[in-house]
Length: 89
Image 1 (cartoon, rainbow, N blue to C red):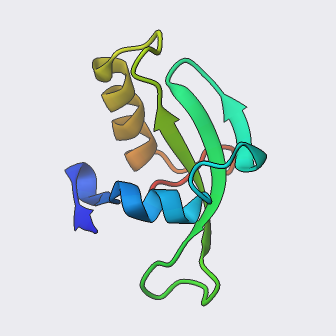
Image 2 (image 1 turned 60 degrees about the horizontal axis):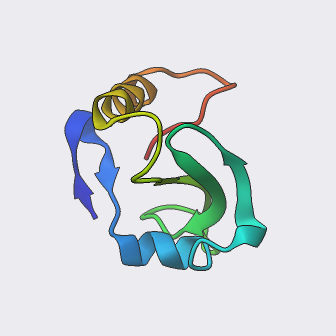
């Protein structure tokens, strides 16, 4: 786990596969222009012993939106704090 832009953590694919039961279709909660979103749980320092509930977006390389748009979304979600938006970790 590393810190990336805006002090956001970067998670490895192994961690994300583990958190989402290998991106199980049973855990898919939505789909958009970038790809699918899965419900999961990550073990974070100081977090809940059974893991912290997370939403993991798995990018579709054939998606209709490009890297620049994805980066803009990540940067926005990294600084905005609102009850109707996910909080990036």
